[in-house]
Amino acid sequence: MRSHSGKFVGLLALFLSQSLMAVAGSSVGDLEMWWDETPVQMGPGKTTWKGKVSIPMTRDDSTGKLQGSGTLPTTMHGEAGCTIDCSYTNPISIVGIETPIARELQIASAGVNASCVIKCPGLSKQTMFQKQEAFTQKVSLPLNSNPVRSAPAGGPGIFYKLAQACDPQTTQDKLLDVSITPGINKWDVTRMPFLTLDGIRREGAANPNRYGYTHHDFDSKRTINDKSIRAKNGDGYCYWVESVNLAFDPITVGLPGVTYPDTNCEFKAVAKHEEKHVTLYKSLLNSFAREFSVSAQSFGIPTAFAPIHVSSQSEGHDQVVQKLDGLAQKLRSKWVDERIRQDALLDSDREYAAVKASCPGGWGN
Image (cartoon, rainbow, N blue to C red; front, side):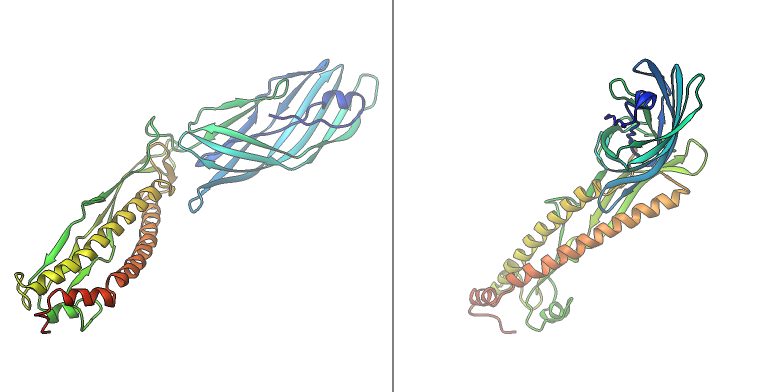
């Protein structure tokens, strides 16, 4: 912590030689801050700070940033023959990020004026104002609900506590369990070698010049394994996700097995070309799966170590569904566009000419 001093004379300068400062931490829930009210020796006298605030903290799921703001009402009482009483309201703003082990926060306070009254035996009381300077602090608050005390050398102490309706349901902070089915480098392929050439040319976007057909729309089926319990205050539920699975259908390949028997050169040439598309699709699915797994683990999905407080079980489930489906749809659009781009490179005029040239005696259709 850092202290700030004013520039008054006499007893006011004595009692306010070090001024207030406040630091804070955040959680899903409220950050509670309060002075520990232990008298602090300052010069020949002692001073005591009092005050408490609860600041709601929010997390922006699109950026992962934490933020909150509030005001800490504070009083200070000092005694050293004379007495001094000051009061002011300290504006607090907080930004930060959440790491696997702590909330890393930056706390800022604007400059304010403290109203002070000094009383000395045999003298009339005096009213003065003390300027409290603006300051910024960095604080690391572990992911638990135990109070943490912080104090500068010789200055007042302050406690911070993550006041959460939902305590961690496990002592270990692990990444969200995300699985992909069938899995990276394990993609299924369904080959349909008994289609006519006319049937292949009607598949998907009709193409009268098509000889083979490989398709995957990068759509997936999402499964969420989630849990919830009653919140400890009896109001609402504590909700978290145990695991998420994203399942993909097989890559579909259509070959003209009726028009060209599978022993013919034409069938083999088409199959060889379509295998290039299969290899491409497997590579793109690998990229999709990796990106989804990494993104989902840093997308603000509540885990057993950091459950969220919701009014109903369905509320928590719906929030997670919206996040995961939005992420999957965003990635699907990205990788479908990449599939279309690379398909066009594979289906070039030069490639078609090479496929035709491989069977100079065939291609009657």
